[in-house]
Image 1 (spheres, rainbow, N blue to C red):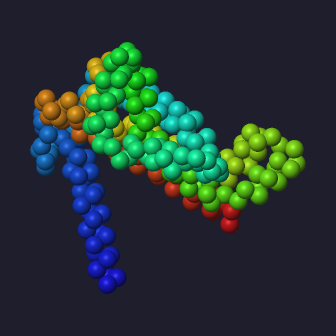
Image 2 (spheres, one colour):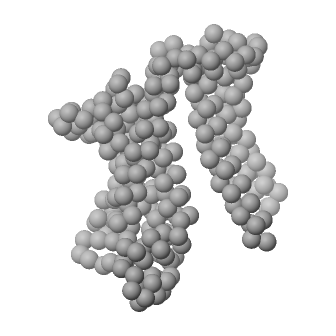
Length: 259
């Protein structure tokens, strides 16, 4: 049974990773369109990506939107997680389901709703509109992560700090935040990556002026199969790889120092 499960795991990993090893060579291809295997290799598409404002602009927009979404998500999710985890009140179950609704409802439904609602508020094609919409999508994931960390926290640490005269807000920054640092970092990372990678809502709300990189990639594959698309996809994968590699190296060196 064990060898079968190992083979199954390897097969699933290969299936998931295979598109990456197809897109990566295409980003260095000399072909004027998306073609695999590449007829030759060069860096021309990378040069075009960083010189073309129609690509660098959406890249910058994605960083701005993802950063704003992460900050707003954590500001909203942190007090919500504390309230839902540590207090009992009437309607708690209904509110808990409401907080998780964006996970259940298809993104296309949310996108259409926000398009209609934001049009009346003048928030279409604005950073604020995209950030608010993305915050709706990222909040459930961050909420679940922070809540899981809070449920495993021994509250005696906070009580000890408060018994020594620390106000609740001071106890949070001195005791709770350091203990739950991993949960908060994971929540923030999930919010950032999810916002940076989101396409459906961005197609409806961002428009031309605040177009994100995933929206630009969608337009490229839909209109002309631009080979620069593979460069954008490779860079996105590279960002994720660097983030996880940095996290792994940090834990590795920390474990080595502690020994």
